[in-house]
Image (cartoon, rainbow, N blue to C red):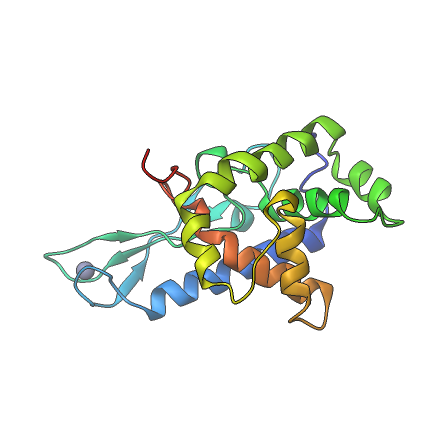
Amino acid sequence: MSHHLLSDSRLESFLLEVDRDLAQKARDERCPHCGEALHSGHYPRKPRGGPDGLPAELRLRFSFSCSADDCRRRVTPPSVRFLGRKVYVMAVVVLVTAMRQGPTPRGLRLLQRHLGVDRRTIARWQRFFGEIFRASSFWKAARRRLSSAVDEERLPRSLLDRFRSHARAFGDALLELLRFLSPITVRGALSAEGA
Ligand SMILES: [Zn+2]
């Protein structure tokens, strides 16, 4: 993965918007332990593969702490910019992997080059979705909440197609898919069932 990955400012602000949205949702739900209000406790973190000169705001991992003195529990909402320990830019991965699996659109080669994603990286992420993600307890639970079956041989493309059938614009579908996938950024969500 090259340093071009985060060079598109529109992508950066798109991902930031998704994370803001997820953070607001977590804050509205208050402390999961005692129900008290949450205070901001954001901290800086550098996405791996991102350029060093990233503005401070883009490196901020949104996080909260409980306002109750006897609780102080930390609540870190899911993030689409920080993929758990792997710390990856999930939108790019999902987008490029999904495009790779579909009928090759005109812009794919350009997008691959622009984002600095090579074939090996895409192949690695196809294996991630085909093996680790597919076997995870997150996916097994999430699959049951979907009203119709999704072709597991074609993940994540089949998921994106599913969200596209509900959303008018491609960007909205991608946004919905990222929200859907965001819990896997929380530690433990990708553990295999029964493991
Ligand atoms: Zn609390």
